[in-house]
Image (cartoon, rainbow, N blue to C red):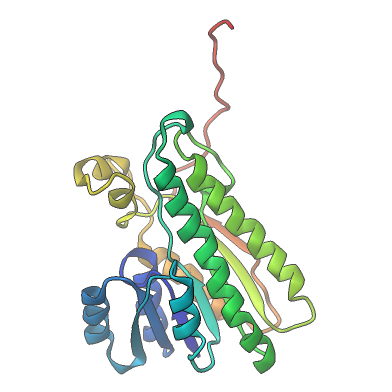
Length: 245
């Protein structure tokens, strides 16, 4: 199996690349940080092919991914959350970057690889969504909206692919301790650490295990959506404002 993993230089993407190589696959690891790609290639050996690429650069995506040989598994892991401000104070630039990375780039990469999967009669798209696409929280505004988009896009292309053997899965993690919160809080590691203080979050390897399980099901089995949270995360009540007016 040949897999292409976006966002492979950290977090869930990196863990997916490691797990798929460990399971005997060949992995094209896509990421922007060339030093991290080189370190990953050194660690995982010839089964990993590093590809320096910003997935928001559509012409480069088309040029580089269009020249790839057969890809059996696409793991769309590239994504980000930026800021936690309420909508009236949020950065529009941050909103735009999240939409561009979490939605547009995922759509372009998927669209580029789907025809080849259909022509070869095999393929699997695994999108990394989030529970934020289903359960809103203060400050999650556009990030949650992008992940709701990922869920609906996954279901919609699954419908479009009916009659082909190509599978589509949306993996929706809850709290996973990676660089996610460090990026969200613009490098403030102390603030990021408080997100996971006093509880045991999921690890990137936990999510890679879910992705590997979905990908290893028999060809006639499609796992549509997987929602996974740490035991210490659950759901809160509806918020109610008691002020008049």
